[in-house]
Image (cartoon, rainbow, N blue to C red; front, side):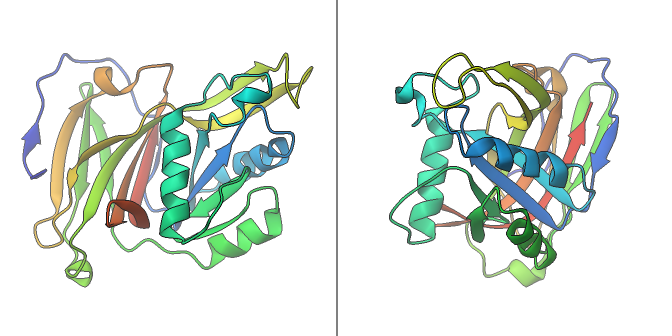
Length: 239
């Protein structure tokens, strides 16, 4: 159980600059530096990620690396996550740029009007509290009787980089210097959420803010037979 989890730590002198406490939507973009169709979607993610009601995350996949440019942020884990979503959606293919909203719906990430329409219809029922004190990230997710029938709900810790520029030397975007935001650097399950008891935990920032991460998202996400499902709660904190 997550309730009451406390981890030993060394104090880290880092102060939070911004907390996104009550987003209505989690926008997960599957993108690649090797995909010529992706830069417009990356720009859309940057725009919506600046909104208070949207928590944006960019997962860089690795299946375009064969073209000649290995994505500097790419990971097979993120490609596998996208494949998991495809199976959950009963889709037979994956593509970039794909943007998934609250784990339920997906659109082509470069189509800004469609992305915004999905966000307008989105909501997150379960509040997630985040705070920092003396180098420790405190996470609090209350119980919610409305989700008592959900038997598999995972709390995920997702560190990310707020922004980076990459000069692409080969592949479809050769010669371009591209700006990326909300770049996921890891994805760790913290444990199952109990709809009756909720969950609280304390984690050392020194163990979270690695690989140049300067932001942390926490998602409360249902699972369907081990596949990613609906996101019912989320929050983020940036440094």
